[in-house]
Amino acid sequence: MTSADTNAPADGAPTRPLTTAQLAERAGVSIATVSKVVNGRAEVAAETREIVEALIRRHGYRRQKKASGPAPMLELIFHELAGPYPAEIVKGVQRVAWEHSLAVAVAVAEPGPQSPRQSWIESVLARRPTGVIAVFSALTDAQVTQLHTRDIPLVLLDPVQDSTQDCPVVGASNWSGGMSATRHLLDLGHRRIAAITGPPHSLASRARLDGYRAALDMHGAPVDDALVRVGDFYAETGLAHTRDLLRLPDPPTAVVACNDGTALGVYRAAAEAGLRVPDDLSVVGFDDLFPSSWLTPPLTTVRQPLTEMAATAATMAITVAQGNPLAQKRVELTTELVVRGSTSAPTAP
Image (cartoon, rainbow, N blue to C red; front, side, top):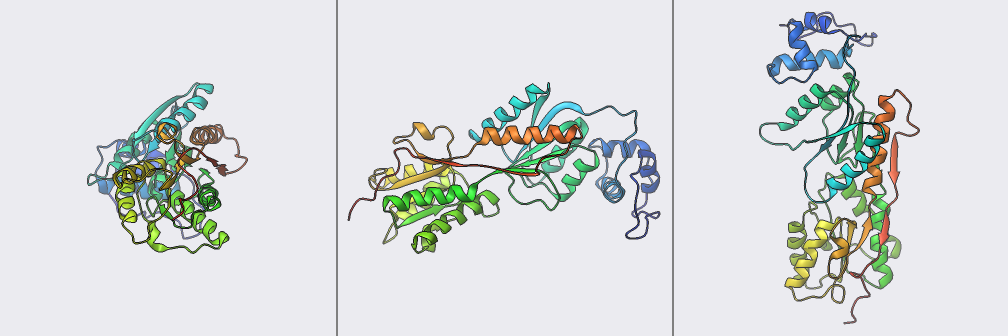
């Protein structure tokens, strides 16, 4: 087995995709070993796998004509399966999949000490689905390359971060959503408006916070850094941050929670402090997912069209799989402020 491609062309020279036999010859391994790597089989030594993958990344891979076509399914890759968010995504993908006689498979790419991210990519490569939709995930460049070199279309849905590779992307107008939530509170008369964000590496979280800051700036209201707390989209963190915010000498009269789960924690902290929503504390969420409309009072929130976003991503994946060009590679769907009972004018001191 060799650790370098001794027959590599000079830098800048054009390369042609290699067949399984050519990959095996250059890597110094058997055709069966290369086949296992190409098809995502696990029983290959890490060093051998990396040598073969490096050759594929450099030269590309030419599948034999006799190879079977892709499996009739769309594969959904989630960061984790928790709360109502994944259900809305599956609903949208399923709607489009049925129209094209495709099944829907779900996998979870949760990082951990045993690197399960590698295990899911191996499974996907072995199944060879019609297309892959990565949801709120941060795929590595190597994983994206593995999918591309196997001709498996990939669409990023509500991605955590920008990909360095040219992948189709579907998202929502998070910036304008954050702005409309904050502007709504400003129009009601609030000036001490707190924000509890999502994780700082999340594109959506950063955009919502930027919208919050822009609304304050446009209104001539100062941004108090003491009122901005970094969260993680979980209710427990919303609870902890709101407890702390309410202990400030000059506490906020309103909170912009960057998702509905965080808003649940805000509600709990307000109740613990003996405060009433919205009389003593106004709250705005983001997503409009269950049980937002069933809270007491019902939550004012920014509706994110998750089902439509998922359907759009599925349509894009199928379009690429059929060999057709996309009308646009980046799609942003509109968010909408839904005013309910959790916001009102601040109580006069």
